[in-house]
Every structure is written in structure tokens, then in C-alpha cells.
Amino acid sequence: MNCEPTLFPTGIVECEIIQWFVEPGARVEEFSKLCEVQSDKASVEITSRFEGVVKKLYYEAGEMARVGKPFVDIDIQGHVNQEELQKLTPSPSSPSSPESLPDSAGEAAPVDPERPAPDAPQKPDGAVETPVPVPASLKPKGKHAALATPAVRHLCKEFKIDILEIDGTGKDGRVLKEDIHRFIQAKESGVAAAAAQPTTPGARADAARPPSSSPSSAGAQIETWQPITKTQEGMFKTMTRSLNIPHFLYADEIDFADLHTLRSRLNKVLATTPSSPVQSVRNTEGVSKLSFLPFIVKAVSIALQQYPILNARVDVSDPTGKPQLVYRTQHNIGVAMDTPSGLLVPVVKDVGAQSILTIAAELARLQTLAVAGKLSPQDLSGGTITVSNIGSIGGTYCSPVIVEGQLAILGVGRIREVPDIIQQGDGEWKVKGMRKVCNFSWSADHRVVDGATMARAAGVVRALIEEPDVMIMNLK
Ligand code: COA
Image 1: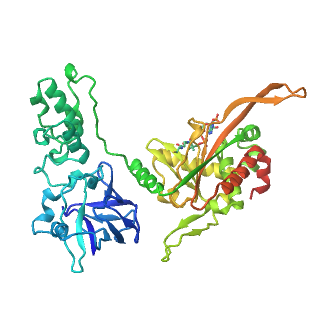
Image 2 (image 1 turned 30 degrees about the vertical axis):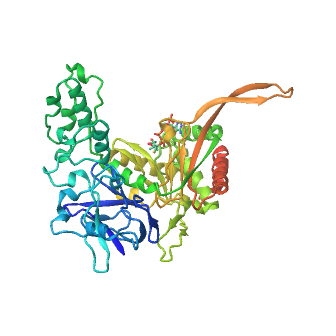
Image 3 (image 1 turned 135 degrees about the vertical axis):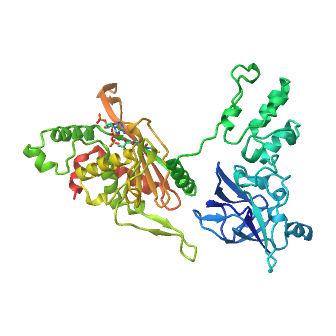
């Protein structure tokens, strides 16, 4: 028998499928995670209410799933008795009956054993459709103020409170955790009536804030809700997808002394007047100053020539289901940028064909546009690997997160001075001076990149930074 869980038939929304935890053929138990969908407040993990075998996924990750429609087929042959089937077969009114709604956003609803079994239409071939959770905000208004998440109902149980006594301040009067805490607090201080005062949704944060003169509420936890920004929304989606990639971290310490010297020398040249012969020959790009980043980006590109796998991507779309590697000729290096609107990752295209100066000019162009919030979709797309120079802000190490469609990312730590300790002829150690060092933290996709390959490629980048003159031999 096939079972098709569906999104709730409220008829108003779509939910985005963020990621699947199962694939056709996968065996699932009751409460096994099926997928993650994006709700208005948080991502929601939807779990199976059945034991069985996944037959079909109706949507790809990233697609919008229609509320009220099936989104997965589960073969539950032999696992459902007639009584359960009866429950799953819809009565004309039941699909939209709020009583049948399972618990909602932010928590894996079926984990709660008290959750009522939702209704599910039965298909002619024996398949049944059952609903899955929807965000709280999507539920019918007004009628079921006591509807609450499993965690909230658990809390009520723990404190032996009847949920119906509490006026919820959540969407549609839903009872929230802080409503319970406020209720208990008020009850303890003998002002339960105050706790039962309804507040309008939207004014939740202010309403929840206790009056400053009230000693009874001093020290109470206050939670406020705020929608995420557009940039955070993009980051949320990208990084959620990145969770599918098994990362491994490889960190290395690089001596920046020679690059520091070379950069200072070049910046002196760039600081000469634009009409000077040296400038006119050497700086056709109008770059006024070089940071370390163009050298790092170029070094990564040169290493990619030797280790092209790090510029590849994994493709799992083959009908046989066998993953493939897609190699790419151009090194399009995404560069993480901290901007007033948040993290953006514009892409320096075809770095292999560029000089340090043209890379610097392109970085300057992208940074200006990023700060002004004017990057085009072209500027932001097509990356094959990423460099994140978090060290320009601070930090020694980081654990960078690989972007979907890429296999590696480099996080650059802060360049710092450490004592240069040498051993003398007599065996004694002495501080010779100070060294400029910087830690490079690489993350790679361990499904296809092994540690040895990553270490060798990182070694090439390190050699190029430590002996930047060698880079000149590779410049086009
Ligand atoms: N360690 C120490 N100093 C560094 C450095 C590092 N890793 N990287 C840059 N600097 C120095 C530069 O040399 C420059 O100093 P100077 O003027 O004395 O020469 C100064 O910091 C400013 O450099 P910046 O203008 O930031 O240039 P950049 O080319 O190095 O970096 C950006 C440009 C856009 C990448 C950078 O400004 C930025 O946004 N970094 C943050 C990236 C980020 O948020 N990553 C996290 C992603 S999760």
C-alpha cells in the first residue's frame, strides 16, 4: 500500500522544501525525518507517521510544495491495520478540520505521541494521503487558540496547567512558551488575571515585555521575533543546502613575510603619480593599492591547475543515481564580502586568465557594488570555489562552509606577528625576530575530496604565498 503524506489543505500557502532526508527506496520508520520545509518562523522537519519504503518524492529541494497536495509516496504495505486506515480515510469535513491539524512550525510534529492522527485521502490503488505540518501562521484564525507545539504542550503537562486557561499571544492566539512562563509567574504572584490578558499578534514583543516597575517580573526571559532580511534569507537557503555536504577541515600556517615585502614594494609603485612611466606601463587597471587578497585568489587558481577536482562539482542528476564529477575549465572564485546588508559572495570570473592587477580591479569593482547593494545576479553567480578573508576583520582559524555546487572553500585568518625562534649552533634557542604568519583553513567535500589531495593543493597555495616571486612564472 502506498501512503502519500500531504501538506495541509488550508488552501493558502506553499512551503519551500529545503532538503530531503530520504530518497526513493529508503526505508523509514515512524518518526523518521522525511524532509525540511521552510516556515515563516523557522525551518520545520517533517517526520513520517508510517513505517515503510519511500516510493516517490514529488518535489526537488528548493521547490515550492503546495499545501494540501501529496509530497511523498511511502509504501506502507503490511504496516497499517484497518483501524488506522479508517482514521486516514477522510470524511468530507475532516481535511480542513483544524482538529486534525498536527503540530506546527519549528518542531517535528509527529514526535509528539499525543498528536491526533491527521486525515488522509485514500487513493484507488490503496494509497492514502495524509497531511504534514504547516507553519502556525497558516492555520485557520481564531478557532483553536489552544493549538500549540508539542514542546508547549509538554511544558503545560510538566507544570500541570490546562492550556485552555492561558490566552496565547502567538499567531491566531496560539499559546507560546513565554505565555506559560508569564502565566506561572503571574499565578505565583497572585495576578493570574494579568497573565491572562490577551495581546494582539504582532505586538507580541512589546506585550511580553514586563512593566519595569513590576518586581515580580524582574529577570524574566523576553523573546522578540523579527523577520530575517533578504540577505539572511539567501544565506539561510544556501547554508541549509550546504548541510548536505560532509565537510572536513584542513588548516595550515603560512609565512607571509615575502608577500608582505612584495606587496609593500608594489604599493609604492602604485602610489607614484599616474603620469609616471612606471605607472603607465604597470598599472593599466587604475588600481591604487593592492591588498593580500588578489595574491591569495591567484595562488588558489594556480593550485587549481594542478588539482582541478577542487574546481569541480558533484552531479547527482544521472538517472542511474550514480554521482558524477563535473570538471570546469574556468576558475570562478567567489569572494565572501562583509557588506552593510550582510554577507555577499560575488564571483571573480576566470581568474586563471587574469593578472594580480586585473583581479584587484575586479575585487574593487565588486566590493563597491556589494557595499552599495548593486551587485547583479551575474556578479553573484557561477562560482566554482570560494575564498573568505575573514582575517581582514579578525580571527585565526575558521571552519568555512562549502557552497552547494562547489567542493572547497578557503578561510583566511588574520595575519599576525609571532616570535621567530631559531636554534643556534650551541643548541640554545633564541628569538631571532618576528614572523608574519596567517592560518589558512580549508573545508572540502569529503565525499569526493580526500585529505591527501586537499593537503597537497593547500601546499601549492602555501608555496606560492611564501615565495610570491614563483607566482610570476605562472602569470598569463
Ligand atoms: N589579516 C590581516 N590584515 C588583513 C587581512 C588579513 N587576513 N586581510 C586584509 N587585511 C588588511 C589589508 O591589508 C588592509 O590593510 P592596509 O590598508 O593596511 O593594507 C585592511 O586589512 C583592509 O583590507 P580590505 O579593504 O578588507 O581588503 P581585502 O582585499 O583584504 O578584503 C573584502 C576585501 C571585501 C574581502 C573584506 O573587506 C571583507 O569583507 N572581508 C570579510 C569577509 C567575510 O565576512 N567572511 C566571512 C564569511 S562567513
